[in-house]
Image (tube, rainbow, N blue to C red; front, top):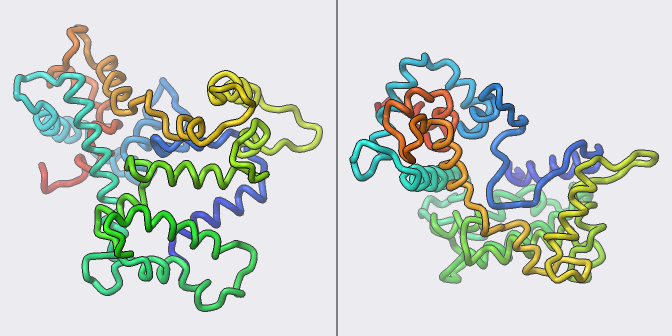
Amino acid sequence: MVHVRLMLVLLCAVAAASSKPTEKKSRVHAEEPLSQLKRDENNFDYDHEAFLGGQEQAQTFDQLPPKESKRRLGIIVGRIDVNSDGYVSEEELKAWIHAAQSRHILQSVQSQWSDFDLNKDDRVSWEEYKNVTYGTYLEDPQVDSEYDYSHMMARDERRFKVADADGDMTADRAEFTAFLHPEEHEHMKHIVVQETMEDIDKNGDGFIDLKEYIGDMYTMEDAEADPEWVESEKQQFTEFRDKNKDGKMDLEETMDWILPTDYDHAQAEAKHLMGQADTDKDGQLTKEEILDKFDVFVGSQVTDYGEALMRHDEF
């Protein structure tokens, strides 16, 4: 049975082949899309889905009475205030959000672990991963010739080998986390860039030119004008992506694009929350200020994608 990860890849491929994108897609790996909704400053629907971890979690949260939400958020405030001075600083917020992101990733890996650790030895071998993910194809390579499973499997094996630090072709939880979430690990980032280059570089010259860059996000149909964002992306490519102005992106320029190091999402979120709740503008938050804006905070990464609000045993 083909694993759900592979099915998601196939569904994306089908969607791309059968319809023209109406909005640009992003290759930036610094953070996955937080919500499929558009941000609306007049309500918190985007924030609830984005920072609670999806539509289902947001709907669950919506059923919590405000009084209970505030009570649980008050407990979380005490955990964020690590120096116990009665205030939450921007740095404490940033540290909490970073930790929440890490917990989210670890929980994601944990939820998949038993699916792949078939012999229950607390390790996932390449053979186990391959059999779970590509089992149907391995049993009968001719069962579906529409997709190049062999190419996908080779790419996975290459990534697995890089994540496998000790080279024994089995992954412990840390190595498997690096395999599933390579953008979060420094030693894996070149694989993310290489895979991106292979996807976009249609002429195989080892670079991404403007046509390939735009073509990865958008396919123009006959007699249609390009959306405004396409022109904006062309300008982005010329002015910022192509740093050496040779008309194409090399590996280093591609890494700067998809794995930017000049933007810290946790820092940006911390600043956003401070701006929303710091009513006296003293650069720090009291518990009262946070609770006054509970509708903002419970829709934020500060609450561990909302999971902390849902775990009754912690409150």
